[in-house]
Image 1 (tube, rainbow, N blue to C red):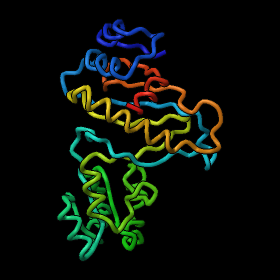
Image 2 (image 1 turned 45 degrees about the vertical axis):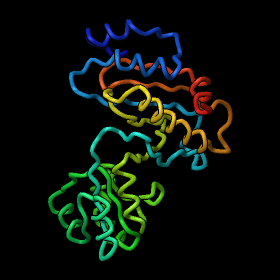
Image 3 (image 1 turned 90 degrees about the vertical axis):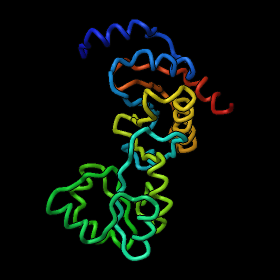
Amino acid sequence: MAKHGKNYNKKMEMLDRRQRYEIDDAVKLLKQVSYTKFDSSVDFAINLGVNPRHADQMVRGTVSLPHGTGKEVKVLVFAKGEKAIEAKEAGADFVGAEDLVEKIKEENWVDFDKAVATPDMMRVVGKIGRILGTRGLMPNPKVGTVTFDVGQTVKDLKKGKIDFRVEKAGIIHVAVGKISFDEKQLRENILAVVDILKKMRPATAKGVYFKSMTISPTMGPGIKLDIPKVLLALLD
């Protein structure tokens, strides 16, 4: 079992380990159990009753957080001609074609958070697939980053559209904001994630789908959520 420091243990005393908290109470506690001096991220972990080894139970997709993640997102777009202009006008930080591919290839440059490509550019982008893939930056049609609609995609990513993918253990980890967000913002971001996951439940997933939900600050204990009440909150 991992050993924790004094600060963590002190904050842990504020929680009842046996209790599952309503979302409003959990968000309030979240701000109290965080002990960083910086504006830490809020992490949301959802354990799903799926087996990712089965292709028909792989849960993967995107969600647009109503209030974003609180982090400035640098977006790179591989495009030419009118689509390159469209990307720049939408606010892309870096736009190019073969020139960007060469820069990434030669300098191992990856100073961006998201990469988007038009379908006709994927043949060229494939040359740096190993560099981008190991960092989770490879454009992928499954999460909407291989598209001709580059303008809207750039805007969505800038506003807080994030992608997620269930891990081998059946867990999904996403950042849903910052400790500085107000309680309503955090609540709405969390519910946006739950809502999309609920809609994406695989037809072949049997038994309990949402096994556990936990929110936590970058440094601080996790707070377990009362799942039935979270699902009821979706109806509010």
